[in-house]
Amino acid sequence: MADLASHKSPAPAAGDRHAAWRLPLGWWAAVGAVGLLALLLFALPVARLALAALAPGGAFDPAGLADRLTRPSVVRATLNTLDTAAFGAVAALVIGVPVAVLVALSDLPGRRSLAFLFLLPLMIAPQVMALAFLHLLGPSSALLGAVGLAPPPGSANPLLGRGGIILLYGIQHAPIVFLTLRAGLTRVPRDLLDAARTAGAGPLRALATVVLPAVRPSLIAAAALAFVSGVGNFGIPALLGLPVNYLTLTTLIYQRISSFGPTGLPDAAALSMAIGLIALIGIGVQAVAVGARPIRLATGAPARIALGRAGPAFAVLAWLLIGLILILPAAALLATALVPTFGVPLTPATATLDNFAEVLTRQAATLRAFRNSTLLAGGAALVLALAAVLVAVVAERLPRPAQRLIQAGADLTYALPGIVLAIACILLFLRPLPLIGSLYGTAAIILVAYLMRFMSLALKPVTSAVGQVPRQLAEAAATSGAGPVRRLVGITLPLVAPSAAAGALLVFMSAFNELTVSALLWSGGNETLGVVLFSLEEAGLGTQAAAIAVTTVAVTILLLALVDRLGRRLAPGVLPWR
Image 1: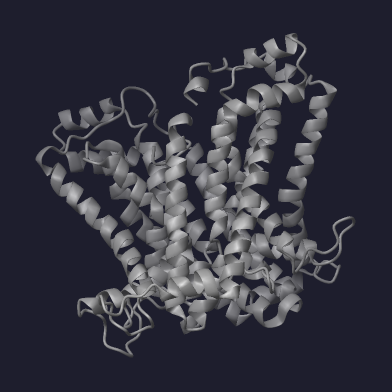
Image 2: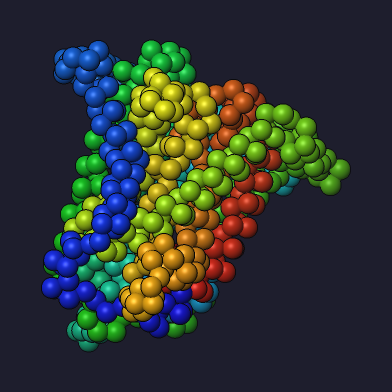
């Protein structure tokens, strides 16, 4: 990407906006292909879901929809969803804001390493995070048992229920707050902070009265994103809420589909519409907050707070936080995976790799799950990397509104809760379609759902890279007689390949151990790792579930390291920790 950065294309002139519409016929064919892709991946599933919710029998039935949404169990689940998502967003702000301020504005030692580790909970599947904390604080905790601090046998796990869900939402979504707020803090000019200090304000007072009010839109956007993520989260309430019958909308949908199969689809569609509506309101609040710019923040050098002698103390506090939210749960997960069964303390005599051998070499279901997840995640990563290049190249020739529309479509399907997309896919592919037949009950429906959900992850880095390819290269090649395909293969692809690879790795990481989508779409023989992990934990085989979780975390960290190495060739901002 360094090569691209040094040859940026000039910004399109105002007159080019009209020229963008005068594309050759071949380009319009490509535009049509991109439009068809957007229709299939984004618009059609959402429209099918709305149709099933509003007209389940083929006739418009708003009274039926109202009846399904006002049943006591649905009202209770809706209130639980709003309650946990709202307080989870508050917890995420409490955890994420101080870290964002320290990393973005101060000279804290080791800021980059801290940012990388603080983002890890966002990269790890929610059900893995929930499993790790369950095994950290439960009465059978192998880690606490090894030092004699485990709760008494038979006592309830303190994380089960509302409080645990809110706490885990806060930890899981704090990186979202960190990313959103850091982007705003880096725009705060040094002059603003210096003016407050000159007027006699100390660092904390200047922060509270000048800096944070200046980034209020980023704070609102961060809270809205954390709230939306909580509304659509399935892995955490599934592991912490279902055992004590504390239901949110996502787990209520899972219960309906698990209990009634396809006959429960009208109810599930209505609940999905409710989740989607709540999520869209949150996304709308975030969009309005981001669009609001009451203060010009982009002028002048960025603000910087010198911590001085307090720097080491703040560094200790920051690393203590990393230890509590990341290292201790990970250690508990590993300790659980190393004991032969629950309740056995971890000692050199009891430590065993038998759980890893069981899930990695003996159990047919887990072996199938590793194979299925690898193939599905790898297939989605490959297809989306190639599609992202095509979409980005075509979009770059279109007017700005069309570019924003394409990116918004991809962002919307990523922002919508995964369980909503899963229900949309079931409705869309349950009945046979021309040419492809019915995909319900096959691995293909999971792949299609992954393509819908993760397009945004593949598209953003490639769009950034394509925007920096100098047009003069393509124009020179065209003058020499090279056609569009040859220019794409010979010029554009080599230059954007690192970004496409980074996007593909991000897609693979997200799909490899996801649960929200595949929990409703899997079928016998098509189990994914998230589904098998959830099933093992429900069946009381937590040590084997922990072994799978440890393996997936190791794969995630390995892939993150690969992405980080690619980061040196990517545009600034593509990787959030750089």
